Length: 337
Image 1 (cartoon, rainbow, N blue to C red):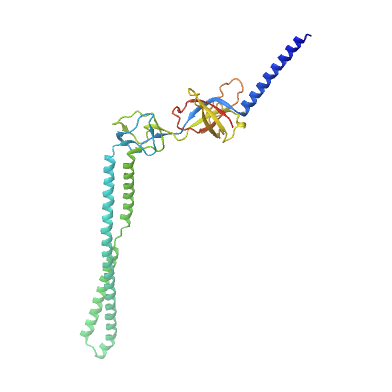
Image 2: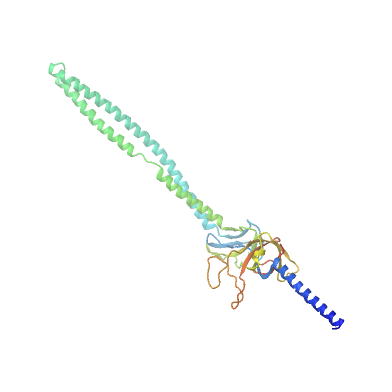
């Protein structure tokens, strides 16, 4: 065998060994730095829903507009709600006046009942005196120390005192029963105050404000549109936190940990890679052909061979103000540790 042939074989062997080494090194890098193209941009969003129904009279927003928390977005005609609030205010004021008047009447009735009770006590004492007089005079009548007329007068005084006592007791009882109270009126006042607070809240709810910093999406209303309570009007995307939800193979999950750093490329903006941190690893997905409550559905892509299931990994982006971030945009994610 010639030296040239031997040298060629050695070179070929070295080339093959180098390729294998490069392939092994690449597999190790890919294994330890997982990467996926099955990912998309996500941000939390809120459907802005009115809590009262009415005609929209002011609009301060348009699609894709950035707003701050507390900014006025829309106003619903407040006039009917202000009328209801005035009605509730009047009801509360009327009940408070009734309670004040009734309280004074109760005080007066209490004084009358007390006077009737004192009168009954005095009549009771008069009856006792008349009864004792009759008891003392009865033995003296037979001895002639008192006349029959005097005895008759004493008995008449006793009967009169007895009748007066009965009348005084009845009057005192009626006076006590006539004493009213304000408890029922106070209960009515509590209900009226609750209605007043609800009416005031409805007036406030006619002004729709931004609950978070965010971006307007899906807005297609004009002044004069009718807002219906409980029906979303548009969407406000929370602009404070953006995520890349990357579906990694289950075999890659053992190399991922919350806190790992990641690089994210948004399709069409590869020249502006973003940085992020792994926030959580998906703990479950919808089983193939089954439905689980609240679990994300991630396809395996192929059904005729055994393919590793993919699980969503949430990567929170460091830069949340990039203008090209849109919910659902396709991204590539590489975890760099």
